[in-house]
Amino acid sequence: MAPRGSRTRPVKRRPEAPALPDRTAPGPAAVADGDLWDCVQVGAGVAVPERVADLRIRESRVAGLRLAGVVLTGLECRDVEFVGCDLSGARLDDALLTRVAFTDCRLTGTVFDGASLSDVRITDSTADLAGFRMARARFLLVENTSMRGADLYELDGQHCALLGCDLGGANVDHARLRETDLHGSTVDDLRGVLSLRGTRIGPDQVVPLAVGLLGALGIEVTDRPPG
Image 1 (cartoon, rainbow, N blue to C red):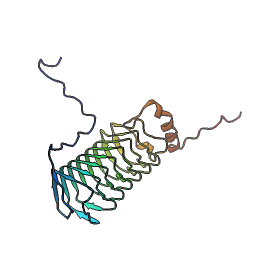
Image 2: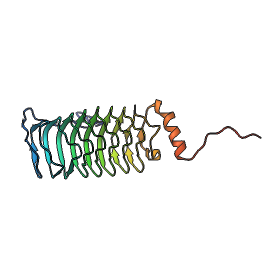
Image 3: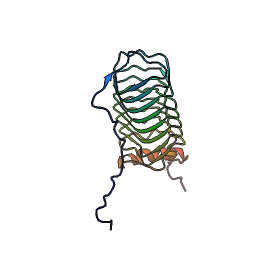
Image 4: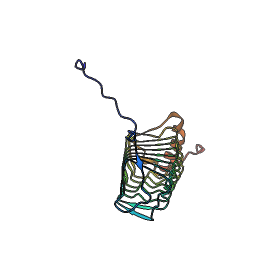
């Protein structure tokens, strides 16, 4: 029996939301290396060069910004919300993202290789061919998002969830996905299905995943030989 007056601490299952301030200042007109965006509202009109180094964004909301193809080295985001932004083909290698939300964003071909993702949420977006190679994720939630052909090779994930996502052709080879939920996602065309140890699926996913597992193990289903 628990001691009188003790309380059971709730178990964390999903990412914490960004802690955004009640009031924000107008964002900058342009971005340069080493900039700090702190408590600002950034819109679509910001001039962004092809390469940006050491940009830090804190407690801010970014809406409609076009970052397609931009190389962002040393990016650090803490308590940031991206809404309706285009990051297709952007490179965020080794980025540090803490309590960050992407909603209705284009992440096609976006590269998060080697990034550290803590309490990150990607919702109602497109992330086909996105790269998460050798990234480290804690409480990463991707929901209602297309991730066809995404590269999760050697992703180190824990307490993550890919819910209602199209994972057709995605690569999870050598990924470590402890306590990760895959409910509602397509799992029948995954590459590296033997790396799904420790994940959780729904009853409707058992047969599609079993087909992939049989193929990965080289097991053929044939008629019984005569005799």
